[in-house]
Length: 145
Image (tube, rainbow, N blue to C red):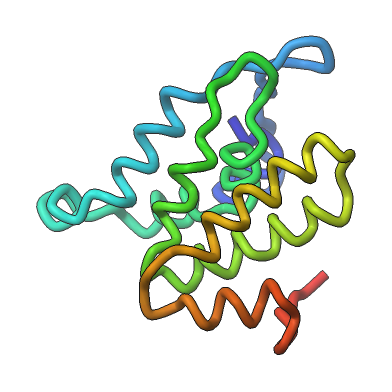
């Protein structure tokens, strides 16, 4: 799914790419499975995720594919919002993706990102104030390039 941008790719390893410039695979079913795995606390307690699985699920490329699915795929952005509840790492990654998306995309995609950002900001948990500060620009999110 991630091909060469996978965080689990070893140096010198070649990865098969799925789809191409004309068609993109539909990852909706696997994305919904991933979000169920991340948000169901009873499931996590019974079957904890390995470090490699957590690293893969919280990869920014995976989150980006969930926020902006390929044409013909179902929208999984609502599930991304669920994954942010009480999760600082995921909250930070989603904030960066949403802010970059608003700055870089066409008007149709910006409208989608703004609607998603509204839902993101309305998550009721301990990180609500942090989200507001990041998105509204009070403190800056420091990132490595």
